Length: 424
Figure (cartoon, rainbow, N blue to C red):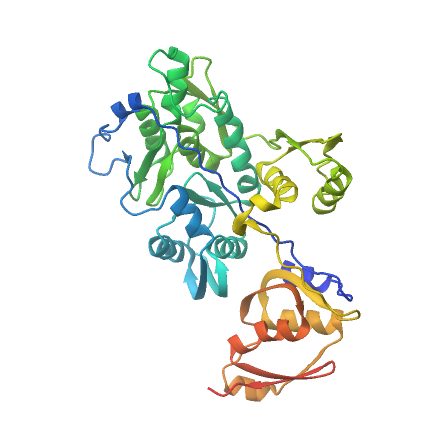
């Protein structure tokens, strides 16, 4: 029994209760720093050698900024049958013009079989990563696919490092700015790092250091390795460096003058702090919702103020709770009215079709009747893994998502569901 099947088997479904895997939402705010003095970097030359990594300012194929954000929430479908992970991600990356960086520790040769219908690109990448025993993190204008423990920390570590370069809300620099201020803006300039197969991570670090005039201390912490081709489009110094260092569980600290970095272990539990102003009288309601969705967060609430210490993702979730009107579509999700006693389902998971059926039998009392020989003749396999999502759906609506896409017709009679191959 797989871990996911074990999870499904522990689900309890009762009238108007939800079951399954908690959903997630992605919010990304891109801040672009522009200054005329940064133009001196525009024509920088790559390291010598035909296979040297290249830094450019205008990536020819990958989306950045708002276009990148829009691509992540675009709805797509995906069907993989024994697909090599690296090849599948490369094809998806090229098709959607979205940079995807696969961590060196994730086996690129593993074969995945998936069928996903009409999900956002980010959700699809999340499913792929889960199947590959990994997770994702959006770093700048790229999607990083790596070990769960690293992906969950990456954005928070980058926020901490980047925040040491930013003062106030300034996005331009005056002619009489101090050298320290100018240096900070130089490091916020966005560059594209592109490398070919068999490039070493030390070459990449040297390239980034060259373009940003940085000295690297403790570079010997990065061992020799050979990496496959990838691109990091339009990233800041912090983002480019961490995309490389995170693959060795490393981070970095700026030197006092910001003319160098020293490599350090990636923090095990990085946290940032943010305060929000609340509408009067909403304090307890907001606190209750935050506690329900993130039990271990422990926010501090005073009159019309709330302070949160957590990861970037947790703070984004808090902001979505406090300001739902600022979230995508600029509206709250529609609330469905369901009659008393009607069971509704909310879940999001990838599992064999038979595992979903077994869970519904065990936890919701349904009985599925079908002829195994007939299914076999029709090439209908219950061990085929599918992605299934439901949000406050009735059983009938869940069945509609489960069966027709698999060429299965169904007829519901009370708690009995009769299945047969659908007419082609």
